[in-house]
Length: 375
Image 1 (spheres, rainbow, N blue to C red):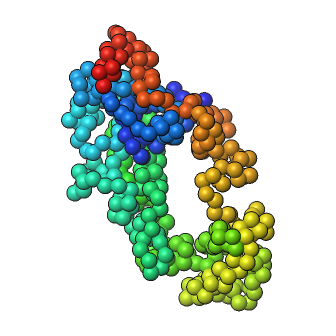
Image 2 (tube, rainbow, N blue to C red):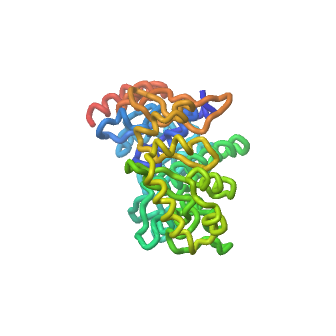
Image 3 (cartoon, helix red, strand yellow):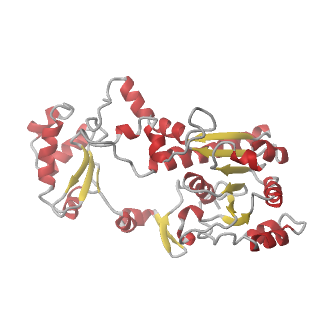
């Protein structure tokens, strides 16, 4: 059940990219045990996708008893992930040295915004700040307008949680050969910088302007953008290649003589975009879907969250699944043999405390029950 079946991951519960990394590892079959803080409360935890498939236990890591129980768990774990500021786990007595003294083969994954060292390492921050530092945010937005935050997809999740998951899996693979653990320093600034690799390359080749909204992939080009339709909805086109562009012009009834020769002349892009804008407003989004969807134009309707769940392509692939009564994204990527399966929906906080600690023996579950009742 998933390619990571048989691996045990300890997750020190937090918010955002750390739990997202834990979700990805759990989706891939790893046993992920989320260590929730004593007194943890949140709105509707049962519909938190990032908690799916995990076991949940409560430990008070401000007590010697809680620390010792965590270290006991570490002895049977393959990896631990945490998202505190640098130095916090060391102060608690559960830093890399403490944990690897109990388990030298442990992979210790650390998720932060700025990294474990550097002038900003101890500063507070959020996704918008991390992607500001790497040129990512500066590159996103319309010409002449301010940068547009791409939700928190680039820093927290793309440059953060996914890079930590990659680091943990790489560490696990290496540990199987060397028998030694190591620390993974996963910084959202580092990850979002790597995500900008293509644009660093384009800039070095003098094919990407530092000016926002005038480039091929940032909405500057008339053949790579979103357009409003007659009913106030939107569609997207990405007709970059000449043959795809030719099909776009044909379906839209636009003259190749007027458009084709000027395709890559960025000076004419605003003018050509205005013409395409006018044509798209002549039909509804669904009417354009009938004409363009499934062709080589490189077209898709711009769907909201509810629409995405019911689109025929997503339904055919099972891109969304219902777990615990909630529709949510299915595990990705797909595997031909070790098929990932979501074990269960998000569990109530601490639901597995006694069961997990019972596996440690020595009456640990009884001690934890008493400790949890005081929280």
